[in-house]
Amino acid sequence: MPSEPHLRVSNPPRRPLMIWDGECHFCKRWIERWREITAGEVDYVTSREAANRFPEIPVEQFKRAVAFIEPDGKTFFAAEAVYRSLRCRSSRKWMTWSYDHIPGFATISELAYNSIARHRGIGSAITHLLWGKDVRPPTYFWARRWFLRALGLIYLIAFVSFWVQVDGLVGSNGMSPVNQFLPAAHEQLGREAYSLLPTLCWFNASNVFLHFLCGSGVVLSLLLIFEVFQVLCLIALFVFYLSLTIAGQTFLSFQWDILLLETGFLSIFLAPWQLRPKRGREPPVSRAALFLLKLLLFKLMVMSGVVKLTSGDDSWGWLDHSFHWSALTALDYHYWSQPLPTLFAWWADKSPEWFKHFSVAFCLVVEIIVPFFIWAPRRPRLIAAGLIIFLQIAIGVTGNYCFFNLLTIALCLLLIDDAVCRGKDVRGSEFGAQPSTSLRAGSGRVLSSRLSTYGSIAVIVVTLPINAWLIFTAFKPDAPWPRPLATIYGRLEAFRIANGYGLFRVMTKDRGEIVIEGSADGIDWLPYEFKWKPGDVKRAPGWCAPHQPRLDWQMWFAALGTPQQNPWFSGLVIRLLQGSRDVSRLLAHNPFPDQPPHYIRASFYRYRFTTLEEHRQSGAWWKRQALGEYLPTVSLDQLH
Image (cartoon, rainbow, N blue to C red):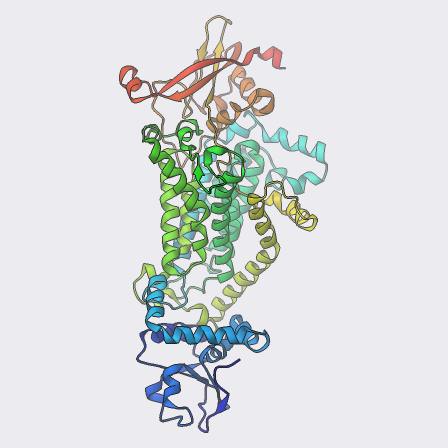
C-alpha cells in the first residue's frame, strides 16, 4: 500500500512534477537516471524550490521521500511516486500496474524504499561501487560501432582463410568435391535436401562460383568495416558464409563457424538502417538486439563451462561429499594434446602443477560464474568483460583457434557502454539521440530503430525457448527435448541461428598423429609434411591464427578415429595418388612434385612435448613413439 494517503494540491503543475531532496547525493544520481528515462515527460525540481509552492505538503515529508504531482493535483510519495513517474515509458508501466494490483508488491516496495531512504549513505556507496558516478541508462553507440567493425574484420579473416584453401578442400579436384556432395545428398534426401542443406551452391557448385562466394564475402566484409549499408552487408555475409559452411561439409563444421553465423545473423538487427551512419545522427541501439547478442555471449560461456563438469571427465574436477574440489588436471594434458599448439603452449606446459590446477579453476570460474555479471550494473559488467577477454587471450596465445577468440572478444565489446569510453557525459551530439528521446529524433532514425526492435523481438520469441533449453542441456545432457521445441529447433538448426556450444567437453589425454608417406616403388618411402600440424619433431609449434588450416585441423580429428570414420581421408589419399595440385598446395612439402607416388600409406605415432632437458640435448620440441599402422599401403587401382 502507499506510504502516505493520496492528497491533492490546490496549485497543480501543468506537467507531471517530481520533487526531490536537492541536498542528497544519492537522490541526485538516481534523479539523473529518472530524468533520462522519462524523456522530458516529467519535470524535476528540488524540495527547496517547491516547498512554498505546495503548502499542503509538510516540509518534513519532502525530507523523508520524493513526491510526484500529476496535472490534476493528485500527489504520490516514496516508491509509489517513483512508479507513477516512470509510467510515461511503455516499458515501465508494469511497475505501476504491479503496485496497484499484485498483493504485497506495494508493501515490499515501500519497505525497501524506506530502508534505503534511512540509509542513504550506504545506498550511495553501493551505487558508486556498482555504477560509478553515472547511473543513467547506459547507451552503446561506441560499442555498436566497434563491434560491427570487428565483426567485419572477422568475416574478412574467415572468407580469406577459406578462399586460399577452397579448391583443395571442396573444389572439383579437392578431397570432398561439393559438386559431388550435393547431388548425392539430393539423391538420398530428395527435395528435403534443399531445406536441410541451405546453400547457394545448389544453383552452381563450380570452382568459379565458390571463388565468387569467397570474393564477394571479402568485398562485403570491407564494406561492413567501413560502415557502408551495414544491414545489407550483414544479410549477404550471413547468406554467403552459410552457403560456404554447407559446401565445406566437415571442413567448416567447427564451433566458431556456427558462432560466426549466429553472431552475424543477430547483428543484422543491431546494425543501423542507414547508407552510412553519421556521428550524432545514428539511430538508437536496439535494446532487444543488444539483449540477443549478450545472451549469445552468456550462452557460449556458460555452456562451455558447465559441459566440462557434466561430461564425466574428472580432469576438469568435481565436488566430493565433503564439498572438496578435486582433480583440476585438464591442463596437465591440454597444452600438448590440443589440435594445433603454439610455441607458448610448449613453455606453458613447463609451468608448475599448482599453477596449472589454479588455471583450470580460473577457467571454470570465468566460464560458469562470471557470465552472470553480464547482466549486472556497469562495474561488475566491465569486470566480467575484462576476465572473459583475458581468458580468450590466454587461450589464443597457447593454441591456434583461428578467429574464435577474436569473435568472443568482439562480443565482449557490447558490454562496454558509452560512459566508459568517452568520459562522464557522452549524451551529446556525437552519440545522437538516446532511446528515451527517440521520438524526437528524425523519422528515418525512428523507423530504423523500430525495424530493428520489431525484428529482434520476433527473434526473441522464436529462439529464447530454444536457447533456454540448450543451456539446460549443458546441465542435463540426457534431458529429452520437448516435442514442440524439438520441432522448431529441427527447422532452425540447418541455418545455424540458435546453437549449442561446449568447447573441450572432454579433455584429450593422449596425442596420436598420422604421418602420411608415399612411395614410387613400395620400398623407399617419403613423408608428406603438413604446414602446421606436428610432424618433424624438431620443427617448433607454429602460430597460424586467426587463419585456420582446415586440413591440419581435420588430421587431428582423424587421429581420434579410423579412416572409415573419416570419409574425406580417402579423398585426400586419392588426390595425393593423382597428384592433385589443389590438394598439394595445402601441404608444406610434397615429396613428389613432378610425378605422383604409386603407393600411399599412413603410420600412427604418439606425440608428446619434450622436457626442457630433452630439448637442450636434441633440439626437438616433440618426442614420438610408433604405434602401428593407420592406413595400409594402397594404390590408385585398389581405391578405384
